Image (cartoon, rainbow over all chains, first blue to last red; front, side, top):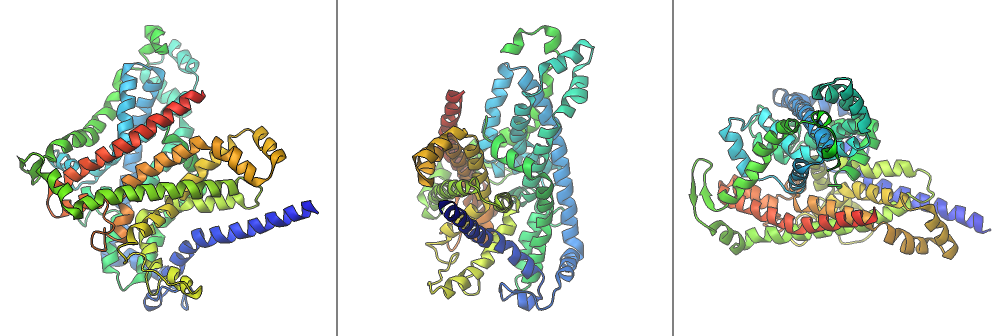
Length: 279
Length: 293
């Protein structure tokens, strides 16, 4: 009897949690999809209903063609920003994590405390503009890349250093005895072994940089080098009566993180919940 | 210190210059602006020339209720979001570690919003929270509740944005708690099963043993909550009036208005706030983790 009651209770719990979580977390995404598939006037009613005329692909095409393909340009710029930043972050952070973990000296502990500050302090925005302007990088993609690299490296170094500790020293020492130079040890032996942690760093930071809004808002104003987050933000005013296009835009820019999530869920979850804390 | 006792030919493989490329970028684009902020916050500043005016910017900042409201709201926002993430995150994690089919799917569903751009989330919820036609109020009306003006009511706007922040960030809190609960040895759960039901398990096993997870969630939500900008800016722009202004939106508004010195003073206030709240939390957390080793 109790066993049956338990099973029934569990089924009820299942059903209720599924319904509540479904409503709270899934309905907003369905709403985005439905609104992005409607005609202008129908979308403006904000109803949670099926579109009478399914025109998602027309809406997406219109968003991409809007203002001579400004959205396409933004997608391109965001790709350069993300790929450029990630390449530098991975390479430079791995170099630091390698020496820092293997040689736990005064330099390493100094670097550790500086990184802690980088992890918790927000950037000083106007002084950063001042610095960028003085070295000629204000309003350039390269300037924004440098800022993203600087603010993301502490997280990357901590994640890579933690993984570095699991690679036995004997492996590098064997290579050293065989006559390998520091660069050879790093590039041929350590970097390939760091692969799982590097994947975590790549997926977590690329989602963060791709989604960054304040960075481009301050350091990359102007139409020609706009990124996707900023484009969508400026569309809010231009599309006020065209909610179907605004939501088609929301849908388009949500696809890259969704793809990342489908392929790298495990790395993203562990990278975001573990790496960030252990200083 | 262990590695320093190793022979020189081995230490040579870990040269200090490997720090240099990262250090240069970090120094120019993070450390330099941070240090400069303290000086420029004491000036009237146009980016081209700066006149030293002492503490005038800070006096203005704390004297003007519209500016200092940003400080108060930032703290309220951080406290509300981290408190709710702790409570709901722990409950969801307890649910999602019990015998529940579909729990993997539910975990993924809760986590996904973490990855969605804040601007997209802000736009979507601004529409869902529309006072007359928004989906949330349409549903509330069918249940007979008086539908509030989520973002238009000055007393509610900050709270409404905080709710959306919780919606978006709950996935991280839940996953941290799930990891914490899964690391509790099975013996404890067995003992709790003998003593009583689900409540005993929750109250005397999960709650005390997931304490480290709680500190982690509080720490992460505070760091995020104190620095919050994107959601506030896309949903209310600090409005109505100044009702939902936080430090970062004040910094942006003063920057837009050309008051660079004042904006930077706001930035320094934010540094100090983050440091006095987060740094002790972090020390405390690290000490606890060391004690457990």
